[in-house]
Length: 417
Image 1 (cartoon, rainbow, N blue to C red):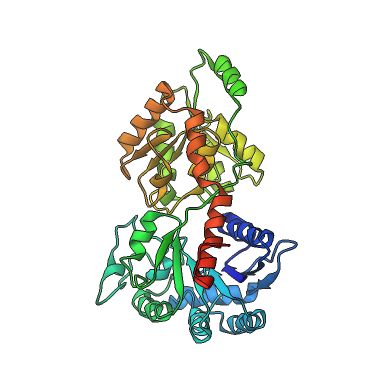
Image 2 (cartoon, rainbow, N blue to C red):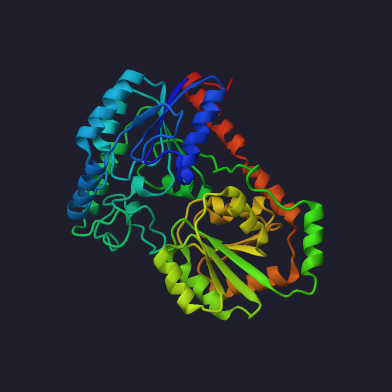
């Protein structure tokens, strides 16, 4: 098999790392793999193509700011990329995020249709079937479902990615996307969550088969304490009332629950500390001023997985108060480290949490979230062993094996080699 993956970035960020891991899995299985990245370059040893550049990125962003046309810029660079694709002649193209201001989607899909190339498209958000946004459940919008209209009069075109600041073009975008993305002869959609699969099946993409392949993590990087270490920790903590609540995000904003964590720091008992990893510098300065005693403790972002694993292990509970999400890998990382998870039932966030490793709380119900935190921290109903066992369902090797089996089924009509 010769597979080309396409994504905004390669090697960094959760999706960029998935691309590299899947690339390496293909290589180890004797297949030919390439990655086409929108920007940022390719890691050493990765064969592929960088589509965009800084000048084109700015031009595409400005096109969207002024005209509301994300995905409809970068014409010249898309033509060059398609020329490269013709030279490679892949057996299958695996799309990930094709938004991000680096592709002209009409040219891309016209090419895929004309050349009858099998396509796997992993959706990591909802952008593909809306007229503007990547997520809409925070505001409860369902215009994208309208059979005879679709998106129009977008209330968040200025405030939500991809930030069409000067023009609401959601009606035009919806119509064009529907025309562009439908009618591919051999396209299979993959979603990381059953929640997103349900949305796709209600959208104009419902003509395509949809499979759920959850995100996976490297279980060798995120590990719990050994039984002996855990026993020693319990002895050291005996009679020590301090409790630690942890939240992790790549970008902290209202929809990720930042306001909820601030409120928790204000209202939890004095022996509780709220730790937040991933804040930017301005947020860190602001929150240190607001909580000079350290009741809310900002932690710098880190790419060191050993350090991140230690941070997860040191927490009494991992809290995910997101109001918009697909299938967050942070839940999996916490569970793999033996830390129970409390999450709002937002998107697919609750799908990784079962009754023996955490609590799923009604979305936005702060009082129930607060009560669950107290119960978990005071009563310790979940063992590190049970949390780890749950995480083992999301071993990345198993997830990539599912992708390889899917490729084989599409290309050869059977379940892998």
